[in-house]
Image (tube, rainbow, N blue to C red):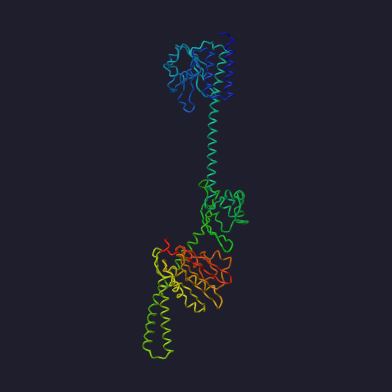
Length: 543
């Protein structure tokens, strides 16, 4: 081989190595080209490329250079089983056949594809104090001990090691970048998920620090004051949310910073005396057991729950009063029976008495009978009946029974009652005692609306198209426009304190709904009100 050939191969090797690095060639291509060029440069029969596994330092991989493009064979081995790899020299080392015996059988030198080994030039691949592997050149002919050739071989071995290290680092960097992008996507996805959850939970939520600065707030809370969350974050909660210049008087956030969760109630008033009842819970957020820098605040609308609880309490009171009234009525029955019986005895014994005496005795008997009937209706209404225990009964008679219970007040106030009850209507299938309560509420409200001396209440019943229609009309003061949307709300009343609970129409509305009916009204302020109740015929309409 001429002297110029190694120099040509040196240039070729350098160009190939630089080109491979500049073009970011893959690891396999870079290794194959570099080992083949070095093997050609040394005029070796073949070469063994050994690379240590960086992720599993106990394992290595060896490749034997093929006669053409590509590797002739490839296999893994345990590094500790190779004496050459276990004691890899730090620089170029030539091992001849006689020296090889000292190493014994070595897995990197055992292969049927290898020629008989006379000499073995071992070139370690080292970079930054780490050993990546080695190249073993079999039977090289070039005088590598020439200073120029030796320096080139050492330079190229170091260059190949750096190239392999650089490619591996780039690969690891790409993997890290991919993992980072995946993590960023997961974080973004988690953030979007949490934000969506944060904004759409039915509870108002916000987070404040020790200076009462809003750090985060959900859309449901910001919508209460018609602002966007980003307009509120960074401001003081008492300023942005409540319009105060200092922390709210009943605020419990300071207690939460002392590690004590707290709950308080707030009633927020709206137009026309409407309100929303809020339950405000403050919970400390602990960064560690001894430090609390943030507090999370939950505002939950418990208006419906509060109304139901208040309704239950009121219902229990009414039930107690009803039970007491029933007990009293039952006790009254005995003296009433005595009054009626003695009045009848006196009428029989004084059959020939003067007309005034007999009229007085008849009035006593009539009043006693009427009082007994009122007591009977009261006792009947106080009985507990389940919704399932509907029965057939006379709708007209239920209205008459309700009128009997307020007959004294009707007479006392000189209110005229006009009845237009259709006697041809069939019996209604209903909880008749509940309906009596509805008629009683409507009649009492009508009497309360009548303020003139010529007050009238007109009650009519009709049966059309398998529906019962009941109308209660008065010529009272009517319902003002601002109250018309609220009369069926629980506890809403226009009566003075102690004269009404605000439950009459609410309970009546619930009863009509239970009977699958409707109740509505027509009113004109100053000219009276008409309540219209429509009840389906449950037996005949197929309900």
